Every structure is written in C-alpha cells, then in structure tokens.
Length: 512
Image (cartoon, rainbow, N blue to C red; front, side):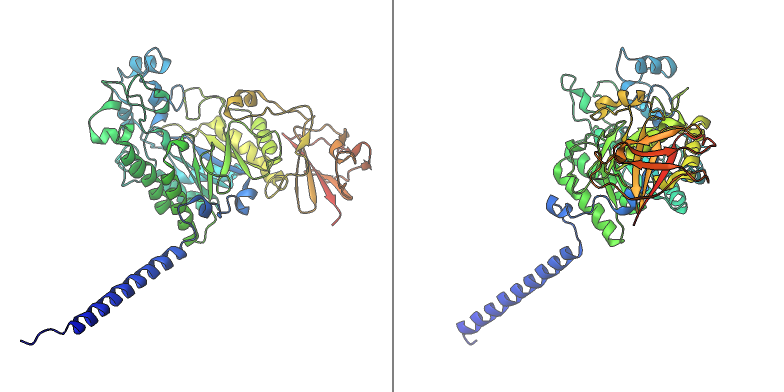
C-alpha cells in the first residue's frame, strides 16, 4: 500500500470545512428569511410596531360580551362564587353548605354536569347583540375558574367534553361573523394559577385557595388542571399560553381582551403570546386588537381598559370601558337587577365623546337563556342607535367632550361605585364629530321650542370657531331656528314637536 499524501488529506479537509460552512450559511440564510417573513418578533420594540387601534375598532364604539359558565349554575352572589365557596364565615360558603353540602364533598367541579345550556341558541344571541347596536361580540372564553368555553385539546375542562358538550365559542364565532360583527374573546385565566400555596401567604393572589381537604389541593392531575394547582412554569406555558394559542388557531379572534393579574405572567410568555397573535393575524391580512386592564402591556401595542369606570378627559388614544348591564354581578344570579336603558346609553355617549369604546356585558342563565329585562334594555338602546347612530359610529372627539353640571370622577375601578351612581340630565351635553358635522347630544328629551345655548361654540372657548351652515335635530323634519353669538355661543330653538328620546341629537353642519 502506498503511503497517503499529506497534502491530499489536507485538501480533503479544506473541502469538507468549506462544505460544512456553506451548509451552515445556507441554513442561517433560510432561518433569517423565515424570520423576515414574520413581521413581529418577541421583543417590545418589534411588537410596538403593531397599530394598536385600527380604524374599524375606533369606529365600532360598542361591543357586547357575556359572563357565562359553570359559575352561572349556583346563580348566587357573583361570578366569584368558585372562590368564596371555600371561605368559612362567608355568605357564599354558608349558602353552599346549606344547599349543596360541604365544599370538600361537593366541589366546584361538581357543578359542571349541571351546566347543560339546553336552551342556548347562538343565532338568537348574535341577532340580539347585532340589533342592540354592537359591532363586535363574543364570550368570556375563560374566567378565573379554569373552565374553557371552547372545544379544547389542552384541558379536559371544556364545554365540548363536559357540561353542554357543545363548542360555545365555535358556534358564537359562526353566528357573530354571520351578522357582520367582529369576534372578541376575553381571558381572565391569568388569576387561575395557585401562586400562594400556604395559608400564611397572601391567598388573594390565587383565585382558588390552597385549603387542605378541599378539591383545590387534590393530588389528582386532572383536578389540578381546573384549580390551577400546578407547577408554575408548566402552567404558564401549557395552560396560560397554550390556551391562548389554541383559541387563536381555532377561531381567529379580532380582539383578545385580558382581565387583571396579567402582570404576574412572566414577561417572556406575554411577548410570545403577542408575537404569535399578531403574526397569525398578519398572515391572514387582519388588523387585530389587544386590550389590557392594567400596566402589564405597553400602550403602543395594546388598548387601555377601565373597568366600570371611564375617563373624565378626552383620551389621546382609543381606550375602552368594560361595564355590565346589571347593577350587581357580572354573571347571572337570582333576581339580578339591570340598569335603566337610558343610563347605559348615556354611558356609551359619554365614552364615545372622549374617544372611547364600550364593551358591555350581559349575563345569561345557565340554561342558555338571556333574561327578558336584559333583552329589553339592549334592544331599547339598539333602537336609539338605529335612528341616531350617525352621531356615534365612526365619530371622534371634538375639541371638548361636552358641557353641563354632571362630572365624572377620576380613576379606575376604585371609583366604580361613583360611576354607578352617576346620572345625567338634559342639562348635560356631549359632543362628537366626523367629516363636516358636529353632533351635540343632549342627555335626555328636549321640550318643544325650548331654547338651548351651546356654550362650547363661544369664541372664548374655541380656538377656531367653525362657520356654521345649518342646524337640525335628528328625528325631526322641521327647519330649526338658530343664531350664533360670539360671546355666548350657538343658540338653538328646539322643534315645536318634542322628540321624546333617551337622548336628543343636534346636528351642526359646518362649511367645507
């Protein structure tokens, strides 16, 4: 055998190295090209390029969602029944023991077979929401209780495998889109994880308490998935993030809305969710919205939500209020009262005058029926919007949101009781505008031939006084008498026939 030429071996080695380097370069190039195909990566700078409030959302003004789930079965107190039923010396606990037995023997999961939704009709619900004036609608996909309101492969605790044995979200998606509305899915499940594991710890940060002897501390892996009693990293990745990805993949929501405690989800998973959702939307050519309640996502890629409260100034960015049609619980409870239609409408008008959007909650019964008093309130508001919606949809704030004696308090949820007690009158006016129209919306009926003074038009109040061409009252064909006084403002005489409405719209047309 001839000796191997060292130079020949060296040549082979050079060729092999070059080949490996070429393959690596090609692989890196492919990876880079793949990354470039996706407009968003998992960092805040990239995610901040997302247009947080697309035009369709700004123009929508009203959406309707619903708190409906296993917690609707006991129909007692509120949707936090699953938590408070475990605390002694609490009315929920006492009620539960008296009606169902001790929670160690009849746990929250035992309500699931009773959640049958036998009268649920997605088409009927979607028609109601559409006729109420909503432009988007959808379910609370999961509340703090860990029960998924969609057909899930991630958790056995879902409406397809248990309870109703129907894909509620799937049925609603089809019906909602069939009515021309966008789909919202709301997620409260960030609070489901048991972050506090001992009685001495702050148990307020966990929805289900870690009380020995209760199902919430069971060693059964299946029960642990419902009660959030899992290893934290596994829960974050598989339960919190996994469920979001599943709903995005299955139902393509136009809005993903988050309740509080989102800040307790590790930042890397919040980024991963946002990138996943926004890239999925971009692939389908959709403009989507992410709504959050607290300072847990940057506002350059999400919309701010204020629970049961609202701004008392014009928002510089589109914002949202989530409020419920009831004057009590968010979910159905026995003898649940509802707000007056005019109060709900006035809330919407005030929000819109400040560049906001209202997400209104309804509370169906466990059997899938929506109580008549809620239906009536929704349809009465929808009737007004059908006639006068031009002053709401597609509008934006004028230079001032309004005038009158009623003022909203400042703050977030901590002032929600003050908002619930707030009541407007026909002395209060809110403004909106679009194109060459300014709408002055009086919060109530205006008596016949009453003289109204719109002080916001006075020269001292407005930097650039508009040149007014015409003034009319929507709902009246009468020619309106009006005059402009630079010192006082715009003086208007109401029609001779009173417009008996929950709110009266004056349309001011200005020169182009």
